[in-house]
Length: 247
Length: 361
Image 1: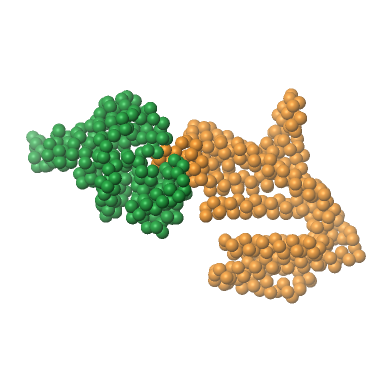
Image 2 (image 1 turned 120 degrees about the horizontal axis):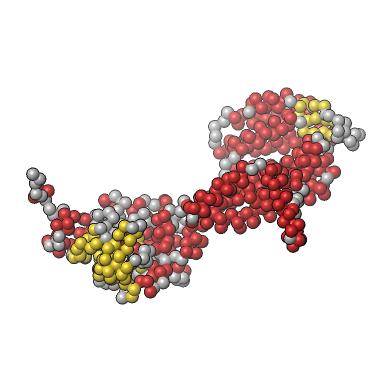
């Protein structure tokens, strides 16, 4: 589904992504995890061409993204960000219908799809005509996810979508997202810095640091066979009392 | 407010002169006031001490409006009586009237909220129209000045509107793109705003005068431009100067409106696959619109006021009446120019306020 081929990018002299190659298979729930500044978000934003790499290639669906028109590419890919980015002057229904509107779906189809998505994400029918500022944080992010799913994309990009939510709401949304993914077989790429989230949701975890890929693997592989001491440290597998003592 | 009422009763309500040039004799309200005025006055006093419930606000605002109209009618009636057998006599509204009118308007403004405002304003306008049409104000000096200069007044009013419109439309066409550009490029904004601020600090008379020489030279150098109406005096320098003044509020509010669009909203708009044009028209502009309208409102009201000064360089408009009145010390003629300017400014202000409220839903 997605392939990064020796991708590199500099931003203001700093190497954000450094010769990174990575493959994400169709139907996978891939987690990009790592400390702040590891390059997770930058990598994600290269998939829908919100950022362009200086070197290397990014392929989506077997085709290099730079050969695809950015708007058309983005309309085929769902996109959710942490602060939701909901349009404040549009109602919940209008927000969800953003991409179908851009694709000029007939009105009836848009209404039907909006209803379907609101039900899927447990958004009460009465919220249809509300504005984003009238919703709770959890409801806002449900709308954000519904908006990303609206045109039924095969690929979903999520940039720390649940980081700003309280633990209870976050847990509920994580479960729902996992159910949606399992039922639809969509490919999901999600950025997180929350290790628990990665371990419980991902089918594959890609651990990044300093713009480089430290290790890729299933949650079990990462825990049982960390590729390097850094990976083990990040996963919290090294116990503090086993660290060599100073003189 | 009570102080104002007391002062108003002491000051002369009307001023009566045997002709236009002689100075007048004061007439107090107590000499004229019919009993019916007591009721609204009482209401006004009572409303000062009543709780701020919706019903009381409406009642007090309506009472104040009725009082204002009653005062006007009283003045007109008195003037009519005084004018009998003395066609040259002039009866002007005196300080007492204006203080009372101001007290009424203040009290009304105090009670103005939402639909009450619209209702009271409509009632006031309707009452005024009835008084004017019924002819009960015809013998007031103000209306006599109007009757003598009807044609001139209508021309001046139209000219004033023409100046305001020919200023605001180009101001919008220039200011909007400038505001967008200033919001996009920080360096352009840093260069533009000090310049616009500088223009704003130039006194309007000075700016009008400053434009005379270059425009006259331009018109002389290129007859084609002169053919389009460009000249050192008249409409062209007036509109140009007013345009320069009106740019700052428009450009600043456009830029501020666009800058307050959250970065996350723009990011998700791009991520959803909107083109740059779609992002501007569907996302940025609607979110910036309330601020933009507010800037336009400031510009429009300011232009209505400043257009008065444009009369000094031969642009015409209501200012020409005001300056004529000032030069011949005819206070009523000055009023004939000032009152429509005030009404126009209030109207424009209310119009844009209404638009902004509709947009805010």
